[in-house]
Image (cartoon, rainbow, N blue to C red; front, side, top):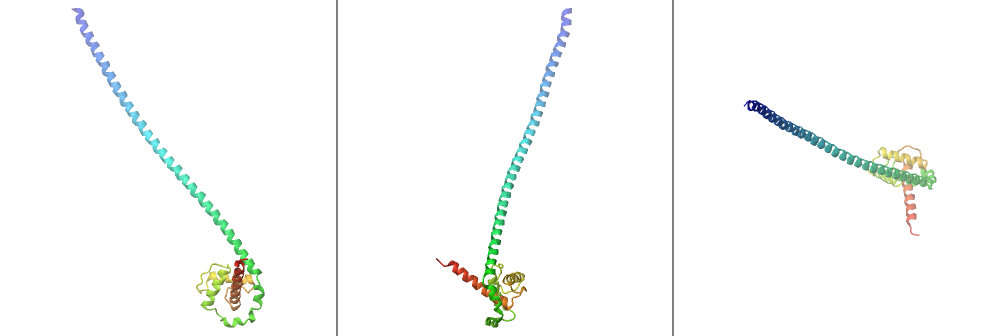
Length: 199
């Protein structure tokens, strides 16, 4: 009987200890699972942030590539414009050289006594100015609008023409300048017709 009395508390103590160990192990596994879920959630957040940053980096790379293409196109266009500007300058210099070498220089000296001057008024009419603007454009002294108004562009073109043919540089459409312009335009037109004739 003594053995049974002593065995019961021992068995009870062992039972309580076993259940306690079992409960502790259950609690521990729940805690571990909770921690693992927390870490998994953190890893998912990190992965999502990484994916977002990767997408932003890819978009930035595409944008940079687009900007490089635009820059290359702009540089090519600038190069074309520079080349075209040089070609135009060469054509203009050639045309002015032809004009300076044409027989206009001899004509200018004899203009003062020409009977044609009698039909030109001291101040040019609107029609005279329009004709002069058209002649200056034809002779490549500027791309002028033939509106009959003597503006700054027309004055600069007249000055350049006067300088080229040896007239006094005034920028005004005096009788000598106007007559010289008309004759120069006719000579230029005649030279152009001769070059266009078939051989």
